[in-house]
Length: 286
Ligand code: AMP
Ligand code: ZN
Ligand code: FE
Ligand code: FE
Image 1 (cartoon, rainbow, N blue to C red):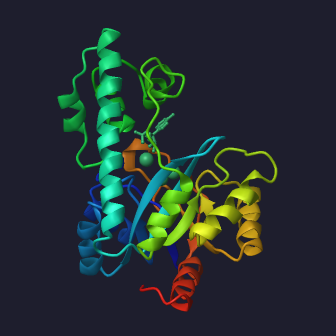
Image 2: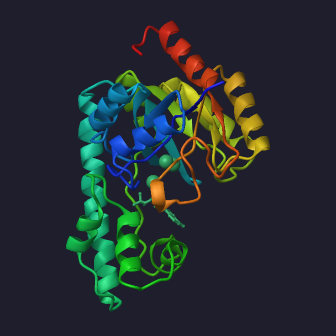
Image 3: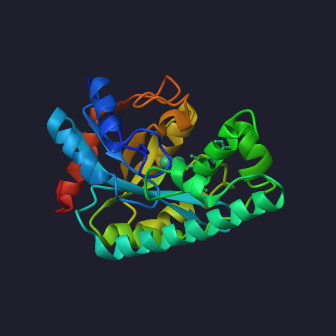
């Protein structure tokens, strides 16, 4: 049996492998397919797809969008994006502008606290067009202001950190509609990363299905066996597809391995075939 990974980040956002390196690693790991799902950018997809064609591994064009609800963030994955989904590209561009404003605010806070860090250094740490806290973290670490990434987030960049600023996020409904209108498979990412009160997630899934949600990410590095079962039941109840991926970020999250998560994750190729089948039934391209 072959395996897949439908949730990964390249250096186009906050992963450390270039899209081509990431695809080469997926191929070397024997995966049948890999999706590149960078935060707020599609800029790594052409390079990743070309590498896939060269090596003979299927590369799915994707992205991940953070959204806000009254209780916490929900992340939405778009899979099988077309080449130039214009309204989506415009919205992602706007989100990256908001990221730039936030990053500058965070750097300013750090400077006000007496830390010698500049926006130029942050931009040099980022190799792609979607820049965020992991790149600021890299500079802080390199300059010896913390001993590891965990400490950077605890002290400075996490929601209780000294230099924290919230991120501008879209509404889940808008993100789902944008991706669905582009013809993507719209997947609720790691729905059990945090515990919502009983019934809340069901209500949200029902609501988002009306806007075009088409799948649930059941298999994820942070999901337990019980979480996976909960997600599979949710998908079944609402007649949604099932997806899965590691949320690989290269050495920014060194304990997560491509296709394997923390070690135990295996997403079967049948999950991939199931999603493709659903797309074909819905008359969507694959
Ligand atoms: P941003 O989109 O700029 O808010 O950055 C979010 C990213 O920061 C996540 O996707 C993670 O890669 C990373 N991140 C968030 N919290 C932590 C943490 N406690 N430790 C390490 N990385 C984190
Ligand atoms: Zn990330
Ligand atoms: Fe996420
Ligand atoms: Fe992710």
